[in-house]
Image (cartoon, rainbow, N blue to C red; front, side, top):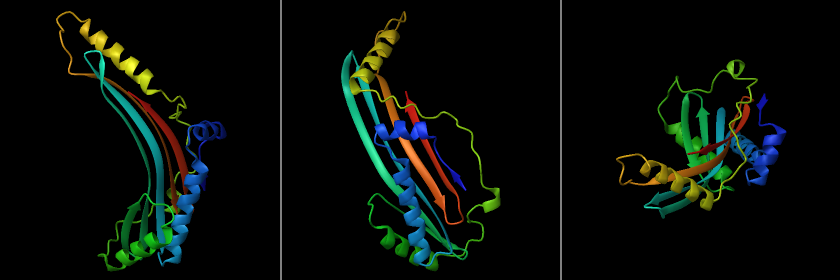
Length: 191
């Protein structure tokens, strides 16, 4: 079963450097590596994102930040034992899978931590329209923060602000399980 983003969302995401197909391929590679290493079941989460923010104080930029992240988590099950590893270094899938399986083999049994039943997994998700492909520049965020600070200072009795800020971010993530689930989502945030 596969749940994915729409073609138009994928095209918008590609224009911003988010390749959902690449993320899906990486997650599938991780799950396959886990099975080869001896896992009875596995799931892999792969995500990528970036965000930026600008903080204004007294009408001037006080802080401007930008961050980017790319990473994955592999969870393996060996019978009723499990372990999880995370990394942000692609190309280490086989070594990570072997390490996770070795960790799972010596972990205490836990009959309650399992993959969800395949027949109970979502098969059709509505498009929640969580992704806006508009990416704001730091100048635009700074202008928004300046307007917010000015609006606060225009309130009678307000003579000072601690700061005002604006931020935006985009994120893509996928989840793949060894029992057939493949899901992807794109989201954006503005503040």
